[in-house]
Amino acid sequence: MSRTQIPVRVFTNPSFAEVAEAISSAASKGRAMVILGSCEVRVRGKTNAQLGSGERIVILKEDGSVLVHQVWGNKPVYHEPPGALVYATADAKSVTLFAERRLVDEIMEVVFSTVYMLAELRFKDEPTSEFVGIEATMREAVVYLPEIVERGLSVISQDFSIKSGFVDLLALDNRERLVAIGFKSKSAKTADVNQLIAYVSRLRALSQKRKVRGILVAPGINKSARKLLNDSGLEFKRVDPERCVKLVEELKPMLERVQKIVS
Image (cartoon, rainbow, N blue to C red; front, top):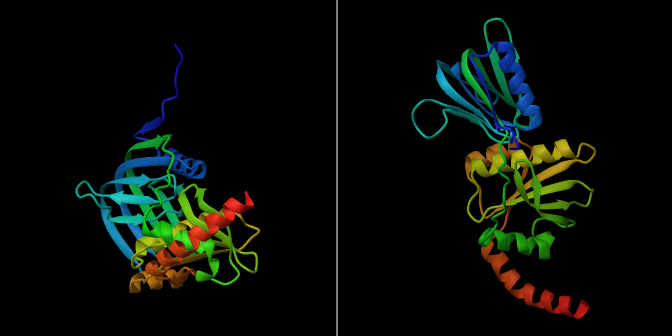
């Protein structure tokens, strides 16, 4: 009988040095991790926050997101969205997990005074693209007519796969910079901006020789999302979804006829 590799590696009552090494190793390899222990949380950046010591569940995901859960409720008390740089250090009294988002100058520190259990996960769960509806039509319109977003754009890929998901549209601008474009059919929120931040951060890591921009395309954007977008150096383009639908309805039949003639 063949032996299959167990997808979970568990440390019970590990030392602080073991925890720091395991966290840094998992983050560098893009693996998920669950940590159970007593910790306090500090957030430093545009806003500062702190949570006193308590027994909590900390989850590190493959895309760099970090969530701190208490033992009740379905929402984390603190979290860093995808794209954070995760690492850890240890001394004789504690181990500290850092989740740093350099694009927005923010860092979360989770300081463990006790770690009861740590589990490193090697799960397989490939993301799939489910880009449908009005947002798909908005993207299709920009593929047909890139100047809806910006004059000089050249579309190079749709549903571009990266570790943290799929970039809706990837393009080059007239200065040969990569442009990651995200589409929302309703007014954009901070979660939408955080998603774009994660994609741009990942693309910058993958393409260090080429500058990367990020543009969020939506009919509107709320105040907090706009502030986060500006602070992150990303851009917003207001586009009417109904205009995109009409454009696709007009252009698609003509382009299909041209395609038949060419082929």
